[in-house]
Amino acid sequence: MKISYISNLIKIFIILSFFIPFSVLSEKTRVDEVPMYGGMDRTKNKSLRKGDKKFIDGVTKKFGSRENASQIWVETGFSYYQNNQLEMAMRRFNQAWLLNPENPEVYVGFASVLHDQGKHCEAKDFMNKSLELNPPLNQGIYADAARVTALCALSENKSSESENKILLEESEQLFKKSEEIEPNKQYLYGLWASSYYWQGRYIEAWEMIQKQRENGGEPSPHFLSLLKEKEPNPNILKSNKQ
Image (tube, rainbow, N blue to C red; front, side):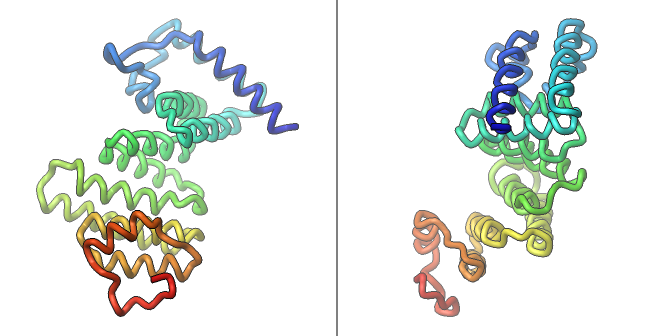
């Protein structure tokens, strides 16, 4: 009942938010569909300032604090994200940021949408921001940061080879940090295996799959098929899954 009540309140505030004035960065992009409203100072626009105040006051009153409301809006954003509604997800993450810019999970939300848009280096920057704010350790955030850092180096970053090498080393250190502190080892080793695959380190990818299985996980059949095409299952890896 409580969940239903909160869900209905969120729907009401989301409907009301459509009536808050918004700006555009281009003919195709709304400013509330880019992280942190594209860096604009919303306080300089009277209509935006008034609309933001009304929104913040309303949700703070309903949910007890800006921090609580921000967390609820993050969860709503991820609900949209899981349904591949990236624009709506970004709008909710922006509102969560407006409520509490110190919420580390807001920046994970920004990074998630950017990742799905293929903007891996921008996503990396927001994951780094999240890590600076001491995010929860039970949600795979360090592993996600490691993954997107590797993607930045391999697929989007236009820097020199030496700079990309530095990014890959950063990714490796983040994976190792994740291994130390995060409880979901299945998730961690699955991402680590995919990172090694992208780098052409196929034996090491198999080693991560072995660790994933030792922790009760199993890679997707599609990923296994791709890896086997590059490197047949090494004899040193013994598993009844093969």
